[in-house]
Image (cartoon, rainbow, N blue to C red):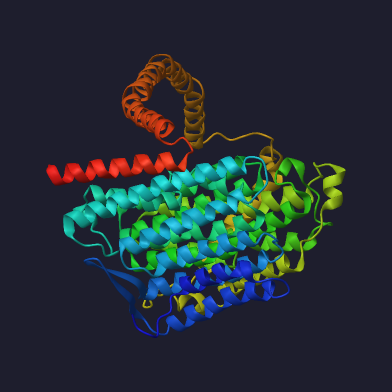
Length: 595
């Protein structure tokens, strides 16, 4: 290992280990210092591309530090989001919440900089375990169960990944985390792909996302919306760029997510479904696999972390103030939470692809790549979904939260207010970067892995097309907004199967299996235990009266003889005792001489 390489994940891990011992008033400065130090370290490492942190292990070589174009752009945004997320959570009193969040970030950074599957798996599981606590720390009803579902689903994904790379190592003797060949797929290829797709929430492995993110703490959801799916996107770029199946799955994700977001009543579940939709763009870009498409996937992941984090921070601010997350229990908040309204609008128009905001210059890159490869249907469907995104995040969400009539209680409305300074500061930083990416293209474009690819989003055709789509969508919302008004309903999804499966398993465990266990226990007590006790009683009796009787009987006999002799020979008269002693000595002496 070179002396110039210090792993960014190690800074977060050491900080998380020290944090519980840091007390006020030093805790908050420490909370800001560690992510900031990690970010500075990431910037420094990006000036030194190469391979670092190679550690021999058994007969293998583990590589912890691979610094190239891909890890640079993802390392930058992940460490930046660690700062924003930690500032947003500064008011959090539970120190273990920060510890879990930092281990979660460390897991993501570990995956981004690794170069082999073993190290990837180590940090992959660290992410899954640490992020589970961000759900469990929420005291809301259902969070505990959601955390268990999240952990079980990701454990299953981890097992797929583990099985895949073990089979690959057995077949090739190679553990390196490199691009796999689409024309030479084996079972391990699909197992690894499935394991990674589960974290990216690719259907049908997606239902964990809205379920878990809606039950995490307000700050925990901000971390989760940034790290899990985008780290998975990074791994798909590394290992599966150009796999055609990802184009189909990506388009399905984009459509599937936006359809469910339209029906959703819970604002955090709504945003979760939007993540599924937006990650669909990235997955489709990875499947297309050209330099422009890969740049688009990286750029859209970068922008998505910021504007989706901003939207989740806005949702968390509402949850923090009112304790509510359902649209049917909110409304009319624009006077009570004007700053939160501003931040949610910025996030909403960013994800919608408004000119001058981040989504406009990143999402269109993927659509342009599909059209460049003559995938007209893919380009059309992704463009259509962008209209749906504006309808949901740019219009429906802010309208029914802030401008429609209040549907909640007077108590909820009275409690509503803008969040504490730290939450606002985090949202200001995220808003700034959403705008910066949209107006100053070199900031993001110069970080993208394929530097020779030119893309100019601000041409006349693209601007005209985008404004027409947005204008038509706004007009449609004006006339039909009552048709998509929130309803207090639950939208069934594929999670129905594992929720019902879990209930069926619980029922089986509670009734037939438990009753069978009780019956077996009763039978054992009657047949097995009684027989065992009878046998044990017999051998105890035999030992006491048989074995011990012989031994103890001999001892008692010797003791009785001794007492008799003592009674006869020791009568308390000294002359008699001397007499018997001398006589016995004489007999022994004579016997010794003559015999």
